[in-house]
Length: 150
Image (cartoon, rainbow, N blue to C red):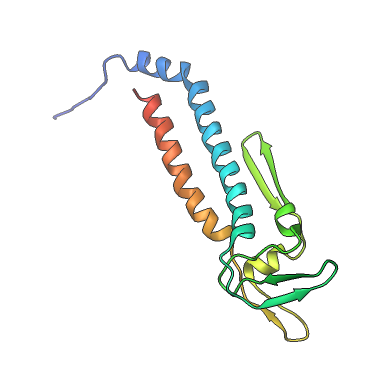
């Protein structure tokens, strides 16, 4: 019979050292999630406010103004500021919550078909922003882990 029992010398001390730094790791991850959430919140608002917009041009009244709408596939463009103003950010114990409280935000993001047959094609702002936010979060978490393991 041949038997091998590998072991790590000082394993108990290593576990104790890691446990003593758990709060530091948790704080770093929490900070990374918060930074990413704030960035995502701001990026969605910027997409609403800055375009590009290559859709139809409307003349609006009360007050009289011109508005260029977004084309399908572009982020919805603000006219009154209501869509951007509907964005909220809230810190949670284990993350963040970002919500747009405007009822038509979902219809603009994913598209919508009305009973009359009229359709709104998707005008995504959240999904492209989320993709970039995921990349940012990955980078920030990696930075936390690298700091933690030094």
